[in-house]
Length: 373
Image 1 (cartoon, one colour):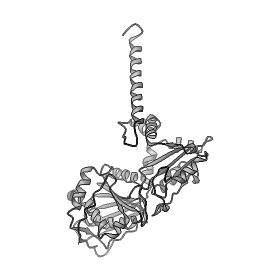
Image 2 (tube, rainbow, N blue to C red; image 1 turned 180 degrees about the horizontal axis):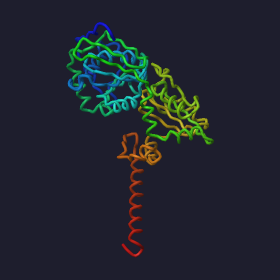
Image 3 (spheres, rainbow, N blue to C red; image 1 turned 90 degrees about the vertical axis):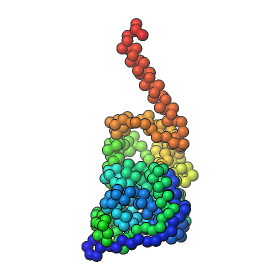
Image 4 (cartoon, rainbow, N blue to C red; image 1 turned 30 degrees about the vertical axis):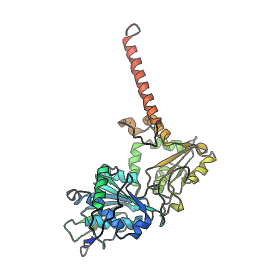
């Protein structure tokens, strides 16, 4: 931007004692963010200050969100504060929209120092709902407990934050926007990118798109229903499954991101994903799935609305890894399990070890011959 450099201000503030991030970052009612002075600014400053100043100067960060209420205004605040804190470049999804997996993907691809994701995950949105902030680190994953604790410790003693309140960006315009600032950290650059493109290219390199397309469009066509629950995954569902893989447009449900998620809670379970459940119960569709607001959790349904629990879905994927080109080429080092995955995965792994042992024993007997032990 040509002209007078944009001023950087230091604004006095007071700390809050309830800004301890959990496993999913900081999640609080919207009323708290709107009703408490500088509540959002305080937490963003704590996140930025958790990055060592030497690493922060001129570095690249990624910013995105699930499109919920407050998200657009919060994105603009993040931009203004990142500039004032020495960040050299921000990569932001168009209109502030980026799924959590997409943020992780972009962080790793461009070697960013981390990313800020404006989401409260599966919690409801709108003025009466929730807002939240996640911080992902350089490996693309969520901040560790140590980083989260550092953010919390900073939040308890914070006295000021830095911001460029006159910095304005156009979140809808793809491309680069450059700014000149009144500090030693200049220049500052914002890049607005297609919300889907980078993650779409990653998926295309991982999975057998031709095989999936044949399944969805061939003579024995598998009919599917995918519910984005008016969260961030809508553009991804339409681009990947409909435009690229050939699923009919009516395969996609609730694919327009809304600030209040259409008045529904974007939690992919049998209680809240009732639109998908009702569609699947008729038996016409053989596969159904729903996503939460920021796209890092899902629910799978089979024909007639059969619920596939997370335990079984993970075990099924583990048992069929050779069908995925990436794992066929790279192999797999292990499986991540949680309370949700129960023991089905354990049973599969034990079964695989049993088969492996059986193969080795059979091979040994063949090599030794019938009269040798």
